[in-house]
View (cartoon, rainbow, N blue to C red):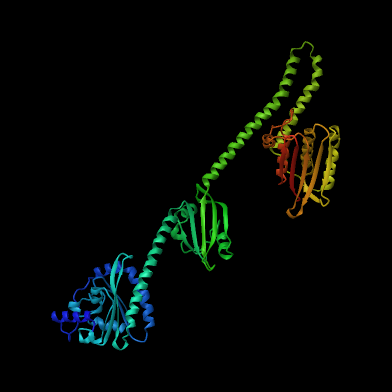
Length: 530
């Protein structure tokens, strides 16, 4: 017999316990005390219950009872055979009672807690004869990493089912419980950190499971969407108008979406402009676990950009107005001067010779205002089907005479596969004439202008390139050529290229320029075929 058991039996005898009598439980917790202890040990009891069910399922051939106590030996919970529970309950052994030696006699719980070692009491090793048909095993636990809680776990069965492996089984069970508690504590701490981060992020966070059911909806998502977290957790994400379809694509096709911009109205007077990202969540095996999305509120940035754009618009309007006023003031000054002279002259008819000059200046002003209107808002293109080969050849023929006066040649290099394009022929011709005119005027003598055209059928576009070997422009000049009233010509108004740019823009095309001072300039006009 184990020396520890023998000493316990001697102590029981010395205390006058009757071995033939019934064990008489002494101390017992009140209902409130028992509730408090269960709450204190709640996590341990949950995990113990999980492992106890697994062990009992394995030991189905015989009745077994598993008991959990606190560090003082008070029973907090028991699992197992209902008949055994009823039997020991008759002896007063149930939840809330204390397994102590001086009232219960020699028992595994008090010895395991006292010795802090695993122990087993088999058959006649019990002090009370009525327990001689029982085999009991107990292992103490002390989970320092989990609230520093201690106690014991015991198994009770019949003597005929005794096996030394029961003690090893209990030791492994305690080790497993400790690992599981440690893992749960780690996960709990990680979840706390995650919740703290998610809850306090300045981004809206929404997470779903693999079915699209919302599992996370942080405070900023509430603010942006105007939806309450409690009302959406556990509901499908797909009905959300602005982003439900992106979640569907992430979960159905595992498609990641980034920088989707939309505006959410959280109240009648509050709008939020957001950038939205969503991606599927996969485990290491590539299995779908759910989807994660975040909103980045860019409302302040958008408002600032709008303010800057408006400021630039007003600044541009101011510059254009100043340029227009300057261009109108010159002919207007001359006209006013002529009229003042006519008022002061004794023979006004002698000033009629100035009428042609006045008419010329007025026509210049009229043309200037017309150009300004076209530049500010050119008419919508009236698209027609145009044969590009013939259209470009006609334009070159129209400009040939001006080029010849400067001893300049306009050479054509047209793609043989050029086809029909839908453009406004008068507006595009205006653009090409303006570009060719600028090229001719930039050449001092003996120049060459190359007009090329290429077809990009794959993208449904065509490109017109005009290159010259004129005086070229500096980088500073090139940066300003599209601005109204800027001109490199001595008498230039500076509206021509601005008008060209607006015409091409209205055709959904692009116009770019490159230039090197002293070597020439190259313009590229790209337009859609349709």
